[in-house]
Image 1: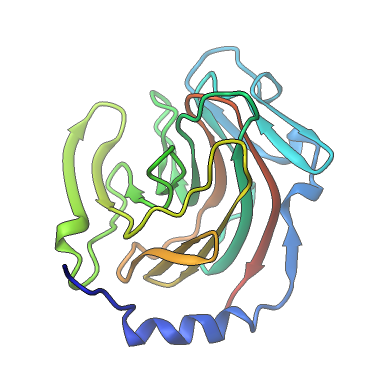
Image 2: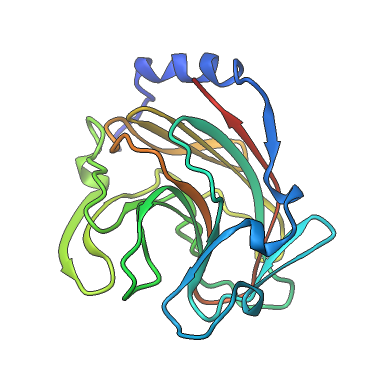
Length: 224
């Protein structure tokens, strides 16, 4: 069994993370008109999929699409909690970061996806040519595919361990993105990282892809 360690070069990221200028509570914006939205289903509006109630962003999971910030970010720390709706079967969803392009023929944009799909929470994917190479020593966790009708060229890095709680319970996710580094923690443990991600600004989005999911306590720290 291989023993894996975080690269020493990641340590400074955590020092940087505490030097953020200030926090933004993303879900203080409860008017859906204040958010970007996309779906490939004609005539569907954001309110047909998403709603806010008591500080929780509720997503029906169908039709497929995403709700995201209108602002673009490159370097940041994002903390958010999610759970599969009580009584609903856990399915698929994700958090988009550095969302920087949208093919109108698909609900999936050019972006990094922090995967939340059941049993895969913490996987990382780059869609439509978003550069997301494997970090050193992680070739066994890396996959690359080309020509997908909905996803284009894809790069993926599998998580190191499963930290997802039982369906219906809240899970805490932290995403730290600084230049080429992206580090993902689930329920207090680092589960994935990359060191040479494409360095672009983009939106932060919450995906609709399969079944009812809820998000709360989305806190964003913009980093230098």
